[in-house]
Length: 261
Image (cartoon, rainbow, N blue to C red):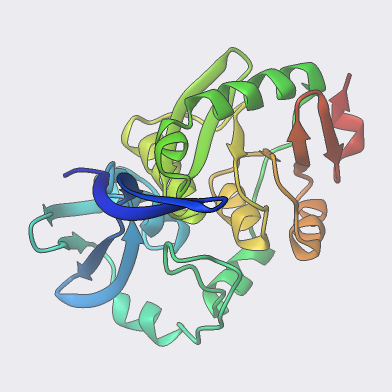
């Protein structure tokens, strides 16, 4: 399925105007049915849908690994996915006392009772030493890869990096979707979280920190701003949080001892 479409626009510049074709990003609704129950609808870029679904289910505590999914059928023509997992999701849905979060039009990311309970017992590893020179280099790679953003201006990008460079670079209309897709690819390909860093283009919210913590990714880097609750959560989980990485500048917000020049 195409990720972009052409549309007729009238472009104004100073006192001139002209008709021309413009490229816009596709917004694709994907409804998930789990064990024959409608679970949620994700508004996403129609690519890496399998990875998106798997990452989303992991971040909703419905699965721990790719093997936890018994079956999956994705019907792109109808915008639906049918899944079977070995878990009664009725109890999970009953916990969904949903509160609006800072997520944009992307995945249906909610704080709920399950998140609050499981965050308290979340077991994460120690962070590792990172160099700001490597952070600058990796952010430059992330920026250069944003082809869909360059053509449409309407997407976010997330990238999984290790000490050698990029592993996955994924674009989506939703910053949460992009991270879910990266995590989904990690689960599909059994990529371990040791010495992994999540780079993102959008702001760092507490939901974003929670997603990475669930996957035991200890370093989050953005070219944008972190929210105060994201900083507090990262502090409590001993995660490295770096924002406003632009050129050879960046702000370290947590775990100062793990970041060097």
